[in-house]
Length: 193
Image (cartoon, rainbow, N blue to C red; front, side, top):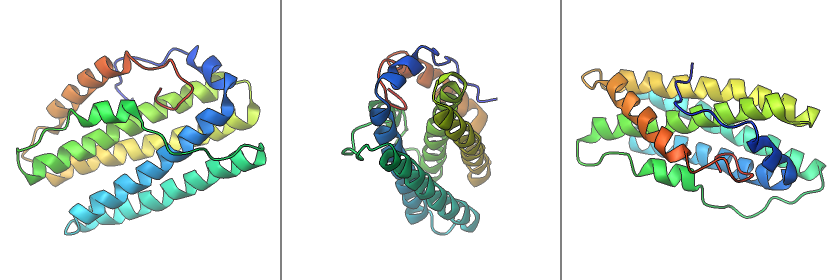
């Protein structure tokens, strides 16, 4: 369904299990960044009523996810660590094309967002299916379903905002690029690491 070219090696979960506090902190900040991304899309596209409505709902949901992860952090006696860079996301951002007009930029921003959601969904599934912690397995299974919905919503909007752009072709380019980027990841106890 996601179309990702390279699956996450389930052995990544062993890294995660070696440092649960790190994955939880990283995950919390990923949710915050997803909420910020949705707000940014609203700010730059306020004339698109349907997009604004969906992005506002998404921002609220992502903040709820942030709170859920933060609650798990507190329940386990951990402390929310400092925000950290997400090198995977920063590498993906370099693939966004500039200078082809406002509509193309929006399509690319939506596809960039869809890609992050797709990979997060896939990672959450790998976690849910392989982590020995029952509470986290259930939690990540629920979030996997949510991320899948976000991924499809971003793709839907990318196709709707500019029907004149071949979004399927551009999405295929994103999938190819992401496959090259993700080769360097899966070696750290972070969501995209």
